[in-house]
Amino acid sequence: MSISLIGKSIGESVTLKLNETAAILRDKGDPVIHLGGGEPKSKAPLDALVAASGLLNSGELRYAPADGIPALKQAIIRYTEDYYGRVVEPENVMASGGAKQAIMVALQAILNPQEEVIFPAPYWVSYPEMARLCGAVPVPVYAEDGSFCPRIQDIEQKVGSYSKAVIINSPNNPSGVMYPEQFIADIVEFCEKRDLYLIMDDIYHRLVFDGKKAANCWEYAKNKTETSKLIIVNGVSKQYAMTGFRIGWSVANKKLTEVMTNIQGHQTSGPSVLLQRAAVGALNGLQTGVDALRTTLQNNRNVLVDRLNSFEGVRVVKPDGTFYCFADFSTYDKDSTRLAKRILDKVMVVTVPGIEFGMEGYLRISFCGTIKGITEGVERMKWVLDPNAPNELFIGTRKLVRDWN
Image (cartoon, rainbow, N blue to C red; front, side):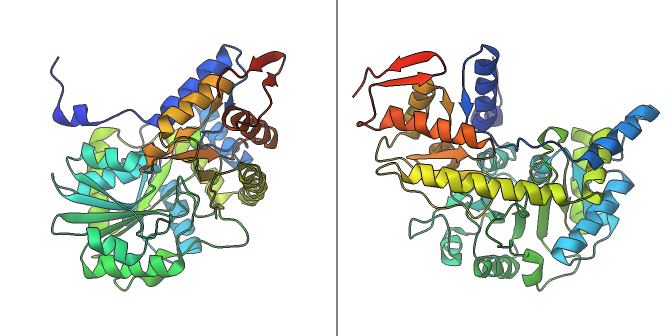
């Protein structure tokens, strides 16, 4: 069978595969605990559901414009002014089938084959594959001090004549770390000086803990004209717990937005008008659900970090936001894929291997589930890994016996 070079270069999404694995185990009746997931357990806002049901009841579900319905674009314009202090026009906005599609279309619009996309490590699993889908070259950047927070010098050292774009995701998936405000200021200035596109993946920017606030990239932009190469991406999936609605958006200069819209129009047409209406309801409705979700996640984070710190040899950086913790388990096994498989096979706890995010020896552990799931899941993990753990463990009525050292 003949497969394209790009097709051969793309691997499956590990996070989506793990979601599928967890669902299969649950359907079989196995007591699996999913600590690898990336979606909150709270329900979508009532305002979103009412808006969608109103349109559904009308029966008037038609094609949507390729860049989004006017009502959603108006809501995004208002959101951009509220959270970025930036006044934009409808021609600057494109609604898409999730923030993932907005990033993908942006990369397709700006990249030529062999050009480079720069992003800090650890990084979201899809960034390298998105670059490869464009025939471009992904270039991860590792902080020289070994931390999760790069310095502008780390970025500068990786930028060359083929570099075209930088992607920044803060707070970061998988680490939960929020990059310092000075770094955001530096990266905006650097990209403007070097004429690089800067894609700000801000999907978690309202899910920040301890009274902190995500830096506003637009505050540091000197070029606020229609020649700006700053692209801001966001969506309803995380902050409104609307992962299945698949609505995201981009805000960029008008010419780039026009090109992105043309590409999206040929790919998928406009996002579902029904789901766009739901997103309008969420954006324009009461925002108390976002605050409640943030509070829940902060509490869950504290519980998870406390439990992980009880492991001897596990190193944990306390997340500033998102719903992920990226913990160093290399004391137990430097091969994160083997380690994650061992934990899944022995005690049916799903985690994500750190190598998928560019760093070996780590596991990404999600705290967007329940306190019970977090505490029991970590206890199961400890039983697998701690040589001083008791010989037996009960999962429900099932008794497990350690048959390894």
